[in-house]
Amino acid sequence: MNFSKTASYSLNILSYMANHEEDQLSASILHENLDIPYPYLRQVLSNLSKSGFIRSVRGRSGGFIFSRKKEEIYLADIIESTDGLASLNQCILGFKECPFNNQCSMHSLWESTRNSILKVLKETSLADISRRRD
Amino acid sequence: MNFSKTASYSLNILSYMANHEEDQLSASILHENLDIPYPYLRQVLSNLSKSGFIRSVRGRSGGFIFSRKKEEIYLADIIESTDGLASLNQCILGFKECPFNNQCSMHSLWESTRNSILKVLKETSLADISRRRD
DNA sequence: CATAAATGATATCTCGTTATAGCATATTTG
DNA sequence: CAAATATGCTATAACGAGATATCATTTATG
Image (cartoon, rainbow over the protein chains, first blue to last red):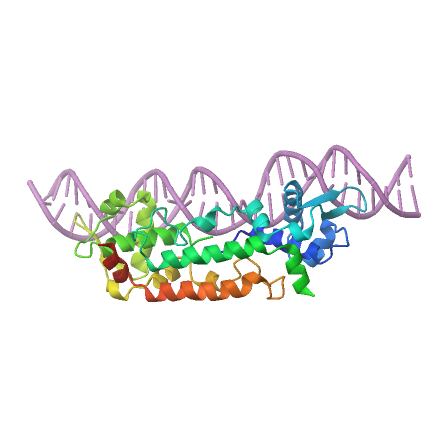
């Protein structure tokens, strides 16, 4: 009943980075501050690089830094790159075809609900989040 | 971003049974009418029996039949017995602790949303659903 | 009674997600 | 230059949900 752990990790990483925008952060530093297993954190960082949210700097004083403005990275972009957003368009009860003839009480509720969620995901940027954090 | 397949199967099975309340239905019959792999269907039926929603009748003309009134079986009961409802009380983004200080736009939205979903699950019985189906 | 058809119970397989490990390469620092 | 500390890349393990397979037991029916 939520997004994947990888999506959650990605959001954690990027929101932490958004709050330390000035710095270039290494996987070690991120590991010390976030509750993410180091080897997996490395993988997730690699994926976030490939997805173009951040870029890596190699070598001894290397690390990761945003390659796009945090004002222009929306939560929906991050979820899309990890889990995809398709599942939001599916029946929350997991039906391919509604056994209730599209008339169950959940149908319209979830339809409007998921639109609200999607709206927030699409309108909330990392900058919005980091501003609020102070 | 939905409930488990097992929960979905369970809802499918029980809602089908609710629409054929008079009959005692075998796993074979259910398999012919629902898109659920036979061996797994058997397992799910066994679990639904153990959970007390239905009871089994053994022997050649055996099958399954409700052991509680369909008016008194709520969707929330079924979800609770499969996935549990705990995940509905968690952050939809998968955070243990909100990295946004409980102030992200998703927080209040999801809080009211999940309450709505929970309300529907708790107030909708199998009878409500089968009535709608006609 | 023998067979057919059902459930009970349980062991195993598959597969994707999550997690781990190790080596190669790059770069700073002494 | 050599050591330390980064990331790049990739192979492998662990784990759980979903799916499969088998055999034992029960009961209706001819």
